[in-house]
Length: 210
Image (cartoon, rainbow, N blue to C red; front, side, top):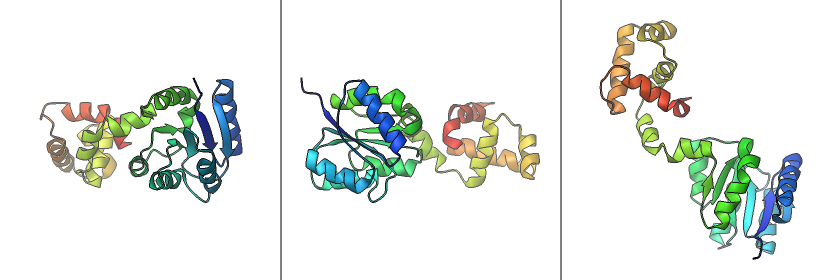
């Protein structure tokens, strides 16, 4: 069975060499490496790799811009993005261009083997932290978007197990104002008005409100 061809692009030479060495040591067929986006895109056009592993932040063309060009020109390389970014907007922008994998750099070497296996088999793979933050929590994210900045601030403090009096002292507002905010948050999050319901929700979704 023919091994899929792989192109790697990253503008950090040490990271690029490290990933290339790792993949070669695991018997993957790396056919090209690039240190900027324009060179990477030209190499994709020329070599037509089965999979392209791209850093999002590169000079000349970003990984997302390369993905956009590949989609526009019907290039069939399956794109895996590697990034330091955890922002939802960047992730959503990437998903518009049929990205097959999305890895955080801090976990890339731990997850790249599983990611490649999934992509080779026609599936998609996202770093666990990304999956937890953006895919499994879409409903929670939608509800959080209904909260005001003040309510988000109070929710963060609730997640830290602070009482209403402690929150009031920290924010220089009255305990009654905190209680009103808490009541509004409970309604917007559609929680049962039970003791500790807000604390339980805040701690369960703590990553989303950090």
